[in-house]
Amino acid sequence: MELEFGKPEIAGLDIKEISCKKALSDSALEADYSLNPYRGCSHGCLYCYAPFVIKEERPWGEFLDVKRNIPKKVSEEADGKDKGMGRIGSVTEPYQEAEREYKLTRRCLKQLSDHGFSVLIQTKSGMVKRDIDLLREMESDVGFTITSLDDDFRKRFEPDAPPVVDRLSAIKELKEEGIDVWVFVGPLLPFENDGGEELNRLKETLTSLEVQEIYVDKLNMRNGVWSKIQHLLEAGQRERYEEIYFGDDDYFERKKPLYKKIGKPVF
Ligand code: SF4
Image (cartoon, rainbow, N blue to C red; front, side, top):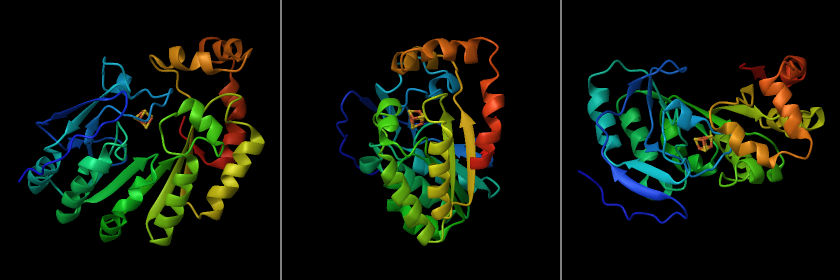
């Protein structure tokens, strides 16, 4: 049975409700299957390269395709598949604002749980706390992306993503509920969020929250990223970025020992 939703109004976002033909894709990314209830994202991260990954040409952040039938598809497809781990939101944020209304991530979780699948979720949103009841029932693994403890950094580079403090409080709550939590610290932008003192404070905070694993990544300058972030860099940094990304400066190799003190580099 299709549920009825009120189509939410989200400023600047053209929301379309669509039907998907397929829900579960085979995954090579630490899970057996991947699924994305939404195509598009309202979080507005300037370093996002999801459009490059999925070959999306529409302006990222200005549209959202909502796959209304995806929970039903998950249920049908899970019936015929080996049980395994489903990764929700492998490309786009599963707990973005539209999820408050549509609850597609929640309903997909329920289907995975009912079919005996485990789940892996990566998010920037404390909205995941809403689904603790389901996450507790199944084998679950939740990863939070945290780029900095400094919310000014978040406002500049992830303007519409939830504040960092919301993510930290969600980590605390999930851990208290016995759910496995890891953190992805990235991307690290040279001279912006990768200073030693700042990273040490972040490490101390995550350690105090008893986060299981921490992964670290550098900023990847994939298609379209440079044109978005270059205007936000402090004076004089643009030239340094050109040397690092388009010249022969081995900046990240020199920084790696510091990054390794925080977590496992994935580059
Ligand atoms: S939350 Fe993820 S998908 Fe959304 S804009 Fe940010 S990096 Fe891209």
